[in-house]
Structure formats: structure tokens, C-alpha cells
Length: 363
Image 1 (cartoon, rainbow, N blue to C red):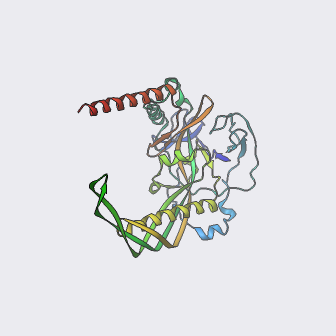
Image 2 (cartoon, rainbow, N blue to C red):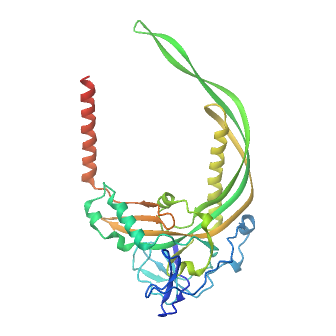
Image 3 (cartoon, rainbow, N blue to C red):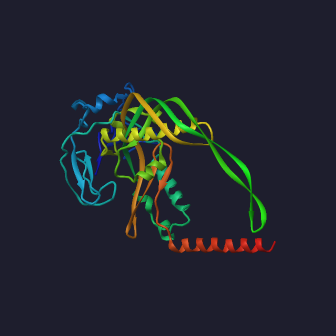
């Protein structure tokens, strides 16, 4: 289930329209007349880290809700929940395009974000880069490349949790040192030799310290996780204190993976990284019976918004998505494959193998 949020609007002093955050000009600009808004974004705030242990015991009501009038609609197709400005009329779901929207009442206000990465890649750039990316997909059907897919590109802010932690880990293992000896043996009356592998095992132990800084856990369920991993990381060092102006005119997805679940995912990922770091310290060229004892301290978190450009479409009976990092421009996408082009590729490889074997056999 996904929630999207369209928040604060800023009136244009020239025409009275609603100013939106403009990635190209990095300012609030009226999309109708191009006038820059005099509204000042919060530059005096700070990007705060919160104590994880304290938050897991309970998030105060003063840090919940968007502090704005809103109405909510739920998509009957993909189950997305959109929280909108009361004046905005939702015609279709931002994530799947369905028009099957019904009113929805939220049970408890969400924990609001406190920092945001503003869009840097503008819509014209996003459309051109995505169009170019699809043009380079050789296996895509020709009919797909002719479609005006980029007409449905939408900019959205996705919810992320970030986690910091200082870890002190001790490990023990058996380190293996490999060596080979030459062995002589007889086969069909002939004497032959072969290399025999031996491993000498010896106990090993060590210790390491590591700081995890802004490990990301995406709380979106509106975009396929594998695609998001393809456009990460986001430059969290450029985070700005949350101000409604940054999301003015944009859609913001409400998190569906809460802090408890995100913290668990973050710890599991950290544990895997710590184990990998310990493995690097083990002497020799192989190991077994690795044991790691890790102590975590100084655990903090943030709830942030990260910008992406999203393209969702259907081709045949299947749904596909393409996403672009709204700061770095990294792209990851799905697309249908032409069975005819796949067949041609397999045939070309087969012919290539036959030619290679023919040439090799003629030597």
C-alpha cells in the first residue's frame, strides 16, 4: 500500500498561480508565467539525527502529520493512497495511472520528513535521457521505441529512512592456507602427474571498528525495489532541512515501511557488511567457522525525501517501470524483449561458435 502526498502551494505574486520548485533554476517558480516566488525556503534549519532507541519506544505526536489540510484517496488497482491538497482533483493514480480512486481515511498521522533532497534534474532533461535510454535497448520491440512513453514521466519524492551506527566487532575463524603438491600416478600403463590441493587450517581472530553513515532503507512500495537499488545511492550530504517549498507542485509518497521494520532491515544489512569486513581481515586464502560478535552504539536515524522521475506503462499484458535519480541522473528500467530479436541473437551466437570451431579445427 502506497501513500502519496501533494503539499504546500505558494502563490505567484504576478498571476496568483501556484509556484512550484523548479529544478533548473533551483527556485520556486510559477509554471504559468515564469515569475520567481518571493517565498523564502528555510535555510536556517538543520538536518537532524534522532536517537533510534528513543524513537523505537515511541514517536511523539508533535512529529506526526503534515500540519496542513488534506484529503486522501485510495487507488483500487495498485492500493496506492494519495494525500492531496483539498483543492487538487485526483484524476488518476500517480503510480499506475488507474482512475479507480475512492476516499480514504488515515488511522494515524505519519511521522513527517525533516529533510529533503531537492530535484536537480529537470523534466526536459529527464524525458530526453529516458528516451535515449530506451533507444539503446536493442532487444526492445521496435513498436515500443516508437511509442511516446515519456509523455507519462512524473516527478515524485520517495520516502527513505537513513541510519547511522558505530560498530565494534570481534571475530574468530579458522584461516585456510592453500598449497599444492605434485603427485605421480599411472593411467593405462603410462606415468602421469597432477597437482593436488592441500589446505592448512589454523585459528585466527581479529577486531574492527566501522561507522555506518546514512545507510538507506527505502520506504516506498510504489516503485519496484530492484530498480531503486539501480539508481542509488542518493547524495545525502546535500540534504536540506525540510521546507514545504521544495515539494511544492510535486507528489510525495508516504512511507509504508515504518521505522521499526526499516530499522530491522538496516541492522540486517549492517550485519552482512560487518561480516564481509571481517572476512577481509582473515589471513590465508580461504576460511571456515566464522563467528562475529558485533556491538552497535550511537544509533541514529532520519526520515528523508529523495527525488525520482518515474515512468510507468503497460505493454501487452505486463506492467513496466523506468526510474531516474532526480539528483544524479542515474537510470534503471524494465522493458519488454522482442522474441524475434532474441531468436536472432541466439542464431548469431550459434553461427559464431560454429565459425570459431571450424577455424580452430583447421589449424
